[in-house]
Length: 338
Image (cartoon, rainbow, N blue to C red; front, top):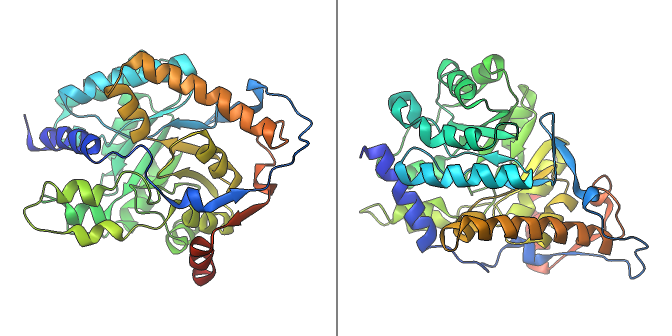
C-alpha cells in the first residue's frame, strides 16, 4: 500500500476514533423563533430543489469523505448507491491521489457507476493543475469540483505541504474547468476576507466547513510524532462562518458539525444554499450497515420536511427570514468580528 493510500486509511480509522455523535458546537447557541400557529402540513416536496442542474430530493448531501484505497472503494460504492436511492448529491474525497496513482481510479469511479444520473462532486487540492483537475472531472463524470483549502491540516500532517501559494493556480482552475467550482475548507471555516477575495476573481460557490465536526488537526496530530494539538482550536465556528458568507451575498454551503435535521434547518436559515454532512453519515454506515444509513437519510428527509412545516414554511425560499437569536458567547463573537 502506498503512503497516500495508507494516509487515506488512517483518516478513516481516526475519524472513527475521534467521532462524537453529540459534540457540542455553534449550532447549539443558535435558536429560531417558531410560530405556534404554523398553518402548514408536512410535505416532502417542500424540500426538493436543484443542484448543478439536476433535481434532488433534499438540500442536504453526503459531503467529501474518502477515496484512494481498498477500504474507501467499498465505502464510495455504498455511498453512491445510497445517494442514488435517496436522490441526494454525493461529494467524493480528494482525488488528487490520481495524479500520481491513477490505478486508484476505481475507488472513486464506483460512486458514479452506482449512481449514473445523480449529482457527483469531485474533490482536489488547491495545487492540482487545471489539466489534471479536468481529467479527474471528466473521468468521474462530475457535476462540480470541490477545491479544498487545508493549510492547518497540512501543517499538522507529518508529510504535509508547506507552500500555500494557491491563488494563481485557483485562478487557472476557474478559467479552465468546465464544471462549477466550489472552494471548500476542511473543518476550520472559510473567513469573510477569503470569500471576498475569491469572489472578486470569479468564484461563485463556497463550502464553509466550519469547526464543530471532524477536526483534521486532531486527526493528523494523532499521526504526528510532534505535539501540534494547539492547532486543534484554530477553527472558525460554522454559524459565524455562515454569517460572514451571507454578508458577501454569495452561494454557500453550510457544513462542519451538522449532526441532525435541526442543524440542517439552521444552516438553511443562515442562508446556506445546501448543507453538507460527512462523518455523521460515514459512522452511521460503518458502525452499522449501508441499509442503516439509507433509512437514516430517508428519515432525515421526512424530518426536515416536518421542520419546515413546524416553522410555517412551504418551501425553501424564505427560510433566511426566520427570526434568529443567539446565546451570549456566540453573540459576542459575532459582534467582535463585525
